[in-house]
Amino acid sequence: MTYKAMQASGNGSLTLVERPMPQPGTGEVLIKIEACGICGADGGVIDGGEKNVVYPRIPGHEVVGTLLKLGGGVPSGLRIGQRVGVGRLGGHCNACDACRRGEFTLCSHQPIVGSSQDGGYAEMMLAKATGLVAIPDELSAVTAAPLLCAGIATFNAVRKSGAQPGDSIAILGIGGLGHLAVQYAARMGFRVIAIGRGSDKAQATLALGASDYLDSTIANPAEALKKIGGVKTILTTATDSAIASSLLPALQPKGKLMVLGVGQQPLMLSPGMLVGRELSVEGSLTGTPYETESALRFSLRNNVQPMTEIFPLEQANEAWQKMKSGKARFRLVLTMDNPPAVFN
Image (cartoon, rainbow, N blue to C red; front, side, top):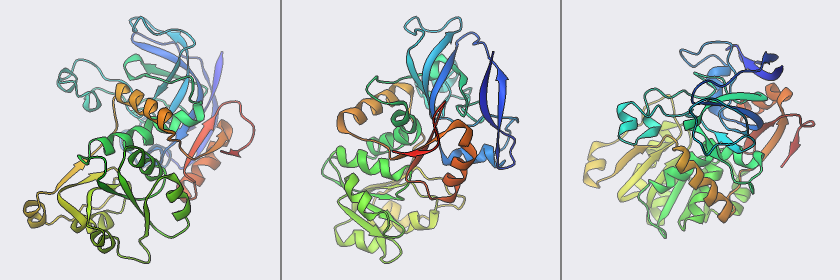
């Protein structure tokens, strides 16, 4: 038996191939994939910019499907047909120093799904049992898939920000990450000030729960934030380090800059400002499977939903080019055995 997959060779495009059906080894499962989200981070593998990738490689790390086969040594609670998901981190080892401390996202022997192991642009995928996330029946595969990466990343960042309900949070960058961060922050009880380029996203952002929208092309966001008394947290999903750095003066004393968007340029920080106002800067990666399940439950109870565009697996090239162009609103999802692209 074989299965279809869209594999990368590092040249910027994807090729439809058929591969032999894999068998799960010890501690592994075989997933029949229903949907897989497309993330900007997939570009490192597709375009060849990520180091140490062994090609050909199947990208994709926002995977939702059902368990088809179980390898030996997996937890007894797993069952054939169970709905599961896999995010960017493919499963901790339970043996390294980070795992012994319970810091599973920092496991030093963890596969990176779609990079160091094959991912979800396919009908089937092998996965480590320790990386599995239980998917609630009430969530469709298309809705759940982006929450396994963009969702948990922004959910955890808001939770770790140190801000309290009623505080003001600024979210820089209203795209695949930012439109979810706005929803989570608003549902958690914060005043949300969204910062984006241009006015085209303003109406949608306010509808998602933002109290204010600042267009960085016509106003100085830092000055605008200071006029309302500053903010407790700035959560940056943008990759423009210069803009993120320019917002630091708008932080209230003991405020925090939470960094999600990874830019190529360094952040420019004033030591005097950091020390004098006791500001902090913190990076936020993703979350454990347990934390991801919490994010899914929160999303269900509070109607947090990604705005998605759906493409069949065979149109992964077209979907990737749309993601790369910046024209996606706001997440793209591949589905298996689906008709041509529709919008959700």
